[in-house]
Image (cartoon, rainbow, N blue to C red; front, side, top):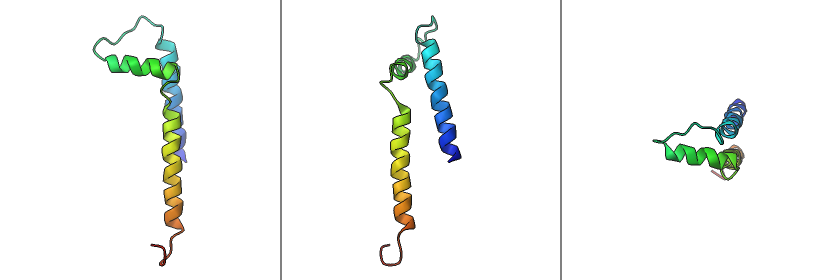
Length: 74
């Protein structure tokens, strides 16, 4: 559970900084993909939170399936 809190904290920070920098005069010439990602985060076109929760949901389901196995279902 602690890892989820850390991941969400960092995602919130990324959204905050993308919002602050989207109209700034700072531009990373050599890192166009970072600029694109910053803009996509700002516009919510890129949402790592959804991606993270989809993977975590799948992970917890697999874990639950394994924990429910016995000698007949393994």
